[in-house]
Image (tube, rainbow over all chains, first blue to last red; front, side, top):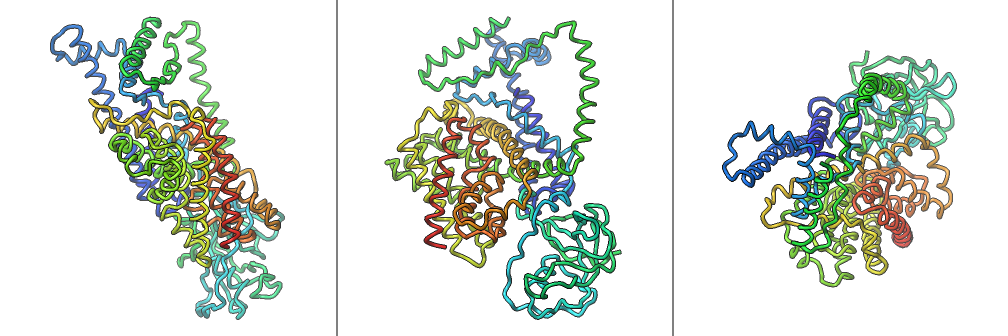
Length: 282
Length: 357
């Protein structure tokens, strides 16, 4: 890869990173929110590297030209304009090899970046122009639900509000592990996106949770009965009661809900987490 | 014209050889990069036609295909691995550039024990100071070798750094809040694997497996600006390693999208198979070492030993790392080293997991 291209690649990568982390929230589709400062710093660093490279290429070309002049003519090369044109003349044929030869002297063959570096254009351009959406129903439908970490048996009494806002994790815990059966008969409200079921009828209210980047996404699901599924990846808030079956408070109880109302909501900005439903649901 | 160019280059090479007399005049085939710039007249209409039609067709096909849910998931996973790796890769390559340009070789010879067999475990423990994931450690290890550190010690550092640094141990403790033994087991098993691999290299390793360009890092040359050396080394290493990270990310994303997650539950019954299965899973998933503890904690169907194997193998061998090592040290090395590391890591985590967990 030629050195001007390397500079372009570095600058593009830097702008791409800054575009998704500093100017927009797109980075939340790919990584956890705490990585934002790291991404911004990386973007700035890449920009600086690219700028330095571009600057040095310019300077290097000039100084090389000056050197040539010194050798050939033996006087100060102050006619910058002419020198530049002269350089363009043979740059394409000899300039590079000459330069690499020079660096070879120092034992640094840094110009010989392998062709694989071209692949870096893919993520850089993708971030800038063709950013893929956050993971959703496709990924969720292909994974089994993440096992909810066992808590101690002391569940706090549920607040009296109705419908009660819950996260999908809390709902799962209450259904499968709360021996007091406090969730019984309660009307609860949860938010997630729609993952259509295999057959018609029931579907899954879903959240994807990541701990570092989207490659480690894990699924939390609550099966929804009683209402037809909206199209996949629609974000909804569901109000309903536990769908009876098995023994409540043991793992035989299904993590499922009889829905009373399903309303569409805005997709949350930071979607890869299991959060309570927003209060201003429509 | 071309002949003249080649002659210039040769004479450069010769004078270089003469003046330095060193074997490190390994010149990459720089000429291959340049296509002949002379355009043949008859190809111009074709070229114009191609330029007009091809991008449109590519955009159309990519757009049609790229909007399939599977393709979108693939792109998202691939991009997220690349984005997540970038800060750590920059950290690693900046460190490697700085080591090359600013740290004199005698610092390392003074810090490490003279006998290589002793230097290996010391370098392994030193891995604790590099707070990054695995992408950062490969370029650093490469520059350490360039600065005269014995390869065995550098490899011990390469393996241990992503597994035992404070950030990773902390996330492990958080993920396995209920079983503090897991942190200790991970620390010990990773250190043991790194040391055994270092000693194994001393015993069986051969220099010729390493790509000759590895010795590119020759440190500060008198008469050059240290800052320019730092910048050029940094830039070269980042672009070089970055390309290979993209390859690894593509491979991991392909696995992630094509293999359904429900496969996970298949092998959880048998204790022996489950260790091998989770080790293989760690290699294919290529999850960053700072996140793998959370994933391991969620694999509740598996024995603690199998989950330990997942966390010991993952930071040392995975698709992304194999690609990165192939790019840095050469394929002959990457294949042998990754295979041996996998075996050693599985044995170490089985032994230590069996006694501690």
